[in-house]
Image (cartoon, rainbow, N blue to C red; front, side, top):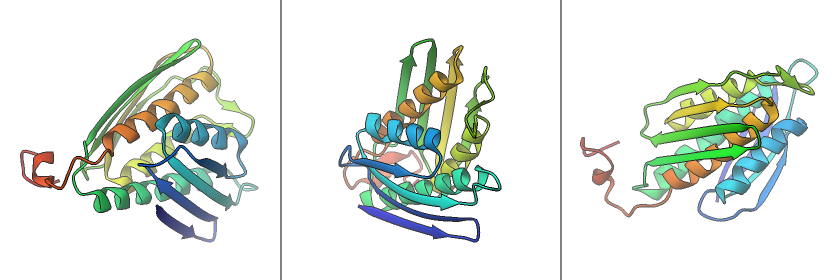
Length: 192
């Protein structure tokens, strides 16, 4: 189990992650829609994720959402460092009613994010869909991940986002499967 804590003037976050065991999921960020997305990600990814987080939501949810991405990225990087060689690549495509979303991941220590989504609705409750970009960018940067996330189509932003987070969970699970101790086989360079 990897444990990461982050405390700033804006947020306090405690996260526990075990990508190889689960799913045991408990998420409480004070943002019900964000909790729903993170729960879907971990449940469908089949891994353990526990998050207790609070932030300056009276200002804006941005700090909490971005910092949660940072902390999850830190935990994934620690998972990679503890695992030795991993499968490296993960891919998933998930439908949800009218929506179809896919995520492709490379665990490569070269952070990059491509997120394509045309959200038909701008928000759900106090959650603005553009904040998914902030979460995924933070996740990619701190986790050293190359993430390509694409909402191919949909009429309902909730369905598109939920399919995207489910795809993210499944792709993470695939990419972080242990592949032995031979880290040289992860890249033609001989090292990641």
